[in-house]
Image 1 (tube, rainbow, N blue to C red):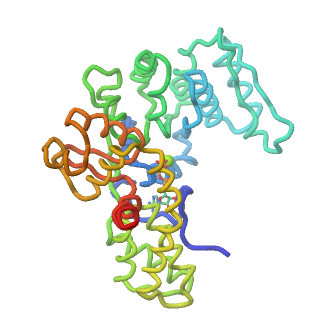
Image 2 (image 1 turned 90 degrees about the vertical axis):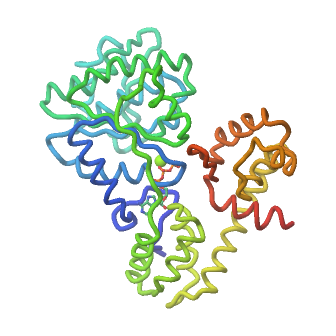
Image 3 (image 1 turned 60 degrees about the vertical axis):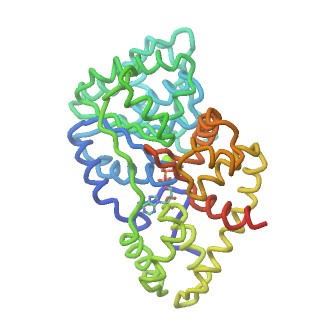
Length: 377
Ligand SMILES: Nc1ncnc2c1ncn2[C@@H]1O[C@H](COP(=O)(O)OP(=O)(O)OP(=O)(O)O)[C@@H](O)[C@H]1O
Ligand SMILES: [Mg+2]
């Protein structure tokens, strides 16, 4: 059965709501070749947004556009390989073009080109692989610039999960290499995006880091309740079911407007509804979602120390002043020096987000579960 909501996948076409301001902003930055860094917590819609904007450029003969996901690139060599493959593929239409491009631009690297028999579509299966010793990165990093120059187009390079590069060996040296090349590329726009706000800000916002002031930084916001109401009721109407604005708003609010969960909860409600959504259905669906997530949250909690758990409880209960003696003792958090470790732990695990003095849970369902299930058991 086709269901009208999507979660865990890129939201496309009519699964994608609003973000008009962000789409316009990013489109203009791409056109103006302004490097852009997009930051948001997990599952707020970075990939969906970039995809949406990228679509407009994919068939435009003034541009080449490539999307690189470096989630699985664990080393610098894997990064370079993914980069070279994506950039080359974006600039050719067939296997012959790809092979010619490799020969022309990368011959000094002695790349191996693999064409797998098992895959029908050669476009997916070809690729270059680098012999480590011969790896010289200059040619790879200049690829989009050179191709754009020669073909008289502009190149837009989008790199997803960019926070992963901070695990690479000699991370600073790596950033220096990238920056040294990319800042010369006046015909290329780089769009780098990912989660882990604190880490990305360190890369792009710290004076002594190579990527300082590399481009605009866009902090993606959640989608507003008003927009969710329009979206949810639209998806119900399209599939011959009805939901009131109040209940659409209730769905969004229950999950704190978190894009992934709004879609997931809407889906649960939709599946339980014959024709008209009722308040009971929304509550029931929410409880069922919490139950589904419960095992995951229990495992997460089981992997933490008591102090780490207490720290999360304190945040969920709205505590702000973690250096106060009272908070430290009420929640048994140890000394105030320990708070830094606890914060780092929670940031590192993507559990919280810190904006100035404000500490927020990244996952609104986890926060709800701690307060209403974990603490009440
Ligand atoms: N514009 C949107 N309209 C409707 N739903 C959206 C939108 N953007 C995101 N979503 C919902 O959020 C989910 C996650 O989106 P997406 O994968 O784009 O986020 P992300 O920020 O790239 O996540 P991650 O940090 O895990 O890579 C989607 O599957 C969809 O359910
Ligand atoms: Mg993503």
